[in-house]
Image (cartoon, rainbow, N blue to C red; front, side):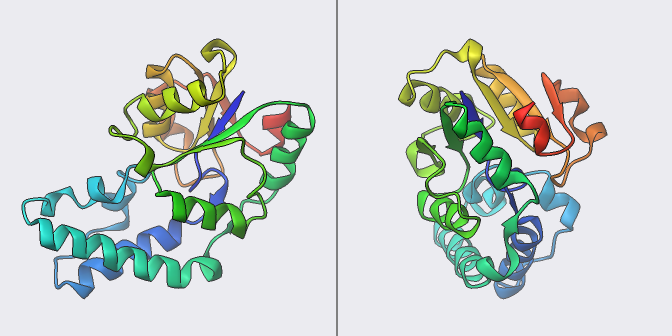
Length: 206
C-alpha cells in the first residue's frame, strides 16, 4: 500500500502556498513572515499555521478565508505536477498496489490538486484535514487511511516531503519515504529518519 502527501510530493505548489500566506498577512495588515518561517509549517493545516492569531476566532477565520480565496484563484496557474510523478503513480497502480492520499488540505482543495495533475482517479481513498481531529504530525490521518484500505501497516509506505509526514508515518507504524524533489533537502529531513530516500519519481516504482 502506498500513501501520499499532496503538496511538495505530488504537486509543485510551494510557491503558490507561500504567496498565499504572504498575501493573507498583507491583506489583513499583519507583520510579514519570511518564506523560511512559513515553510517550517508546510504540511500542517491552515489553522495550525495561523495559530498565533487563534486568540481572535473572527480574525482566524478571516485569515483562512483570505488564504483560500487567493490560493484557489491562482491554483491552476501556479500548481503543476512534478515531472515524472503522474507516470510513477500510474505505474504503481498498474501493479495492483492500493493508493491513498493523506493531506493537510481540506477535501475540496485536495480534489482540485488531483484534478490539476490528472490524478483524480488514482487514489483509492482520501484522508484530508476535514476528516480528522488530530492532523499531521499526529498519526491519526495515516491510521485512518490504513484502516479505510484494510491495509497492513507493515507493508504500507507513506511518501512525503516534510518532517511532519515522516513523523506521522513513523508514529502510525508504517514505513516512510522522503522525496527530495520537494522544498526540503536531505539535510533538513535527516533527523526524521525516513526508511527510504527518493531522489526521482522513478524511485517509487523501483
